[in-house]
Length: 325
Image (spheres, one colour):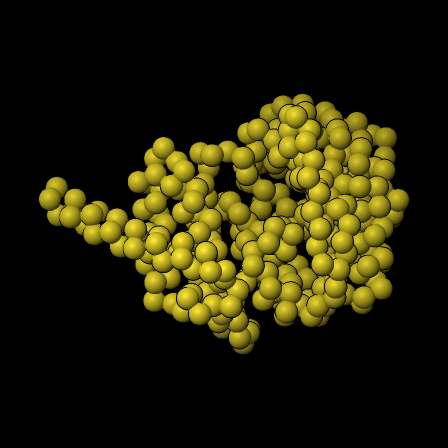
């Protein structure tokens, strides 16, 4: 990857988002920090998204368009990383928006703190009603190792997601998003943070995350239970790089179990979906989650109840298997 000094490469995955894309690209075009390239990665759209992209490419030479076969969000991001010329990377989902000083503020914070990653807060925008809810984060500067452990332990949205951050491009030299998986940021962001020497945070809601009907995050039928394997991958990563994060990893596993089990139990097909959580809960049962300093009392109680439910569920499933054979 050859980089252009101080150039920011904005990687924008595009897939069938014609109703939201123009607002996104307008927000990119309005950036006060003008030394950027916007890589529009069309992941095989079948709507008018390519035509909207073409309008920006024709009128602004900072925008470039690339079309590829459909491979999912991770594949589109990875494609953008391989094409990027900038010394810095930013990810903006094609149905979201950024404030006019998004790049400028993050770039200034990164340079001022001599960091490799700068993080801002964000605003949730709920469509179609347009309701907004801004969030606040602590303004501080951390070592990459501490930021990584904090991300594992708490799984806060602002820490985990890719899109509210500015990165030194070199951090992605050996890191890519997992193709074909939902919740791809859960598998990836902690690795990027661990690779950085310093991470800085600014308490300004500069990214506008749009919740839309039919998106991956709002589709109740798409659960992405493969995310439950992320703690095992994180454990392997920590062993490989001699990172001591035992308590953080237990918290990571616990929070994912709570989140995914809640989704499963709220589903009409809860038996099938809870079955996918039961093995993760059974593994958690042998871990010291009760003494974990990152988990609240109610989380520990809830986990204990779910572990009992998982054991009963697995026994019942085993009996059904025996009786049907």
